[in-house]
Amino acid sequence: ETGVTQSPTHLIKTRGQQVTLRCSSQSGHNTVSWYQQALGQGPQFIFQYYREEENGRGNFPPRFSGLQFPNYSSELNVNALELDDSALYLCASSLEIGGADTQYFGPGTRLTVL
Amino acid sequence: TQLLEQSPQFLSIQEGENLTVYCNSSSVFSSLQWYRQEPGEGPVLLVTVVTGGEVKKLKRLTFQFGDARKDSSLHITAAQPGDTGLYLCAGSLSGGYNKLIFGAGTRLAVHP
Image 1 (cartoon, one colour):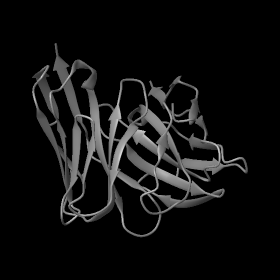
Image 2 (cartoon, rainbow over the protein chains, first blue to last red; image 1 turned 180 degrees about the horizontal axis):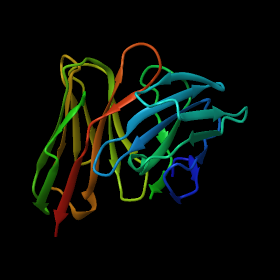
Image 3 (cartoon, rainbow over the protein chains, first blue to last red; image 1 turned 90 degrees about the vertical axis):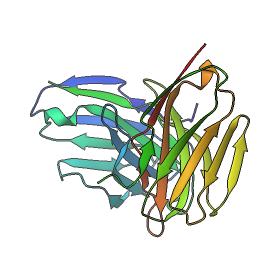
Image 4 (cartoon, chains in turn purple, cyan; image 1 turned 60 degrees about the horizontal axis):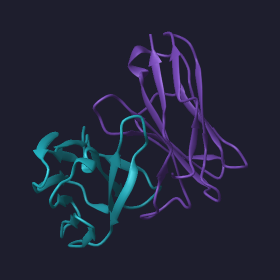
């Protein structure tokens, strides 16, 4: 139990639709990162938010966007869904942005795009 | 491009056997983490290694960080069925934000 929660647990969408995934960070953590984990692969970094601002981004197109709120909860938005967006989406919270600070992962949201 | 190569991808062994999982890269990491992931759940941190040559033990699990901080290994002694799962290594690059680069994982099955 990491204290990081995500919703919904599962989601089915069709190609071209938009989706919003939500994450509630561990209490006191001001940094949240989002990862995409395709079946049989390790998680891939999407982006990170620190104190409500995007702090770094991986190799994902602009249709992947995010928000972090003052209470440090966050959202991942994906527009114009494609079949390849089907994956487990993980959020991870940490206390600070640098060094070997531990990232605590939520259980993930399983997104299926048909 | 996979910056972190994990091997083997799959491992099926009998209870009581020993095993080693490897994580290799050409990049230098400021730290390296090992996670274990169960089906339908997020990765759970097992250990973080920071110093080159560092060895950490967690019960029957031994983790080592290479001297040059480019590689790591996880050794499990006397594996048990409860060790079954996906083991992921993840490196953090120096400087900037704490972005984790994951390997593809090693799926371990320990049979009674």
